[in-house]
Length: 223
Length: 295
Image (spheres, rainbow over the protein chains, first blue to last red):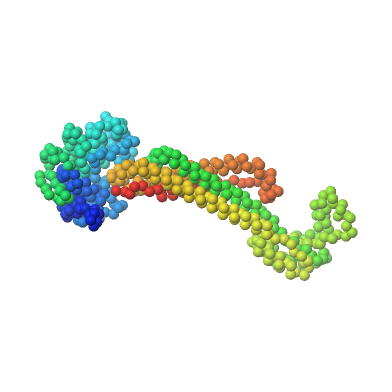
């Protein structure tokens, strides 16, 4: 599902040159659940941004879901992103829309048939246990609920790959465990998951293959 | 489905634009009203010019009244100079009769004349193709060379003056309309950019979930087009009202000034062209709006 070969990412030039990633290579098979860990600034977010082509690598090859990501033309990026669900540390919900509208928005943007939107959106909300809050606005949600809504939005288009960039970073332990459980549920239904977190205490709970980044280098791949 | 999404988002954005969006509509309406107003006046001036152009006459005054047997031959020779649509011979007697008619109650003054001083003449209507100042001048020149002709009068200089005024009028109208149109485009661009700023989170989500740039950008085009369309309808309604108010006051003066019986309004095709122009102006403003650089 994901293959990186000798990927490096450098920002700036000269004295302000920063190597965010250096010679990173790994492979994640379809259906795997992989944890990406490392301290803040280790390069986790940069790596995820490379995977959905928000950035282009300075060097190396990246293959995601059959797309040669580094070589993608701008017009082809939407096709790559349709195969990926993404969740962030901040839920990024649209303030003026209800939870249901936030989830349905994805389907509307992608041109889903009108008759399919409501059942699909409600199915996604049900999967994250948020059906009862469908008509609530983001400001009426707890942080855990907002993150669950964000998960529903990520999975509503049935992506083959879920990229989670610190989705538990703002949550207390109980809520974080809740979100972790939901991500595992999504993975158990066949979605490949790459879960980035700097919270070392979560890693043992997950009991999954772990990739560790330090200063932009992959220093551990175990499990 | 995608069309309804684009239209719904555009309408939502238009509501978000608020007063700036309204200002854009008013500016486009103002520019179209100015353009349409100049167009309307120019069309009617053009009609007057065409009518007066049809009435251009050249009169060839004859040295002597031709004998009855020679008249036909003279008219044929005049016609042979070319560029003539119609000829009408006016005898001395007929000329005097016309003078008396124009004198009205003073006609008996003409009775006091010892003899008829008026010359016979030939009224020449030039071909439409040469009813221009240059063409008429050339015709006058050719008629002057005929030995039977004493003097030739007539021309279309004043019609040409009117035509020049019309061209100047159209130029002024275009310049004013263009300046207002640029202002309108900039306002639509500002309104749309403001909305893009407001909806940057939505655009980020759209890009992240895989929406194409066409889908992301289409609402701003539709928003601009909607503003232009509404503005064009407002402009057309303003022109219609102004026309309805002005026509009853102007029409009595028209026959004696421009020689027109009535003022005409824009035809349905011209009105549609005005609406199309408004919609295009709005679309251009929407197209030029710049949002945040895509991730």
